Length: 232
Image (tube, rainbow, N blue to C red; front, side, top):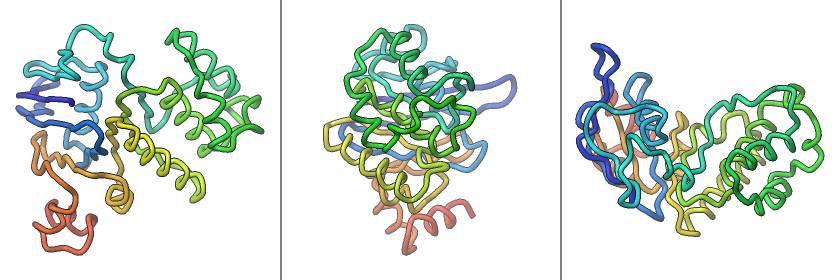
């Protein structure tokens, strides 16, 4: 369980997060959704310890954040664009991250096979396609078998086959009892993957609940139209 209580964050005069309260449940896929400037990126950075919030609390499994980052060992993070050195091969990236984390990567080879990357692993990142880099990014997020996954636009740049593989993997992680947080601008993808949705608007939570409940409340036929109706 991730508990967020009274979370407030400002940058100078700009209030980005305004007294947020939310519970992100274990064994669920939660989507954080909002238009640009809604605060979702800042919320993700606060969860990761990349931004310190000004007031409020974030508790991850009764571990209070905002100062001590040991909890990060429980999190696998997949940014939309990973900034790895371009001259490194995919194999060297995985080795580097393993050394930094000082953890076992027993799942790395299995994930390489799963994402069909065996023929790409010894090539430098600078010659790999965006989709192939995204699959390397997914391996780095998953290979330590974390309890919590935070996936930012996870299918960006992936072809339909690779996107389906990653979506299946996300569902499998949920089935294994993981807590999964995703962001995406593709509402059909959110509807396909997520159990619950946390919709941010101007730094506040506008909706927190099941995806189906949001669609029903708006009277629309799918999530994309439901979100569009709320935004208007």
